[in-house]
Image (tube, rainbow, N blue to C red; front, side, top):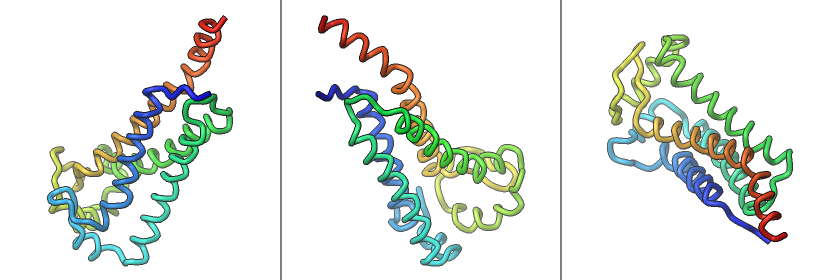
Length: 170
């Protein structure tokens, strides 16, 4: 019997937002949120397809695992996978965007590409070290971070929920 928790639904919504980002942000014009022509000028079609496939496959895998176990007890290896895998993606985002932006480490390597691809996109943060995370990437990073937080919450509270359910039956 499945007892789907609201947090699990929010986790799927969060990963749906991440999946939409992965599918659309390099391919479909989204007004001021992206500049598809600039991205195509900076990256080859092969690079874009590879990047998109890697991202989409990862998120679909995470969502599939969640859908298989939603409302049930997650095995330990699934709990670990659902925390470690997205955390590695998030660390990549931090190293690619936030470390250069906030501390300037590696910024000189990224300034030209980021300026070409993202200078015509919406951002509300100030430019620092020659770059600025644009709004769509900020939404992606926040969504991914919230998914990690929800997963931690689910893992920390799962045993308490099962105990409450057992006590209410007895």
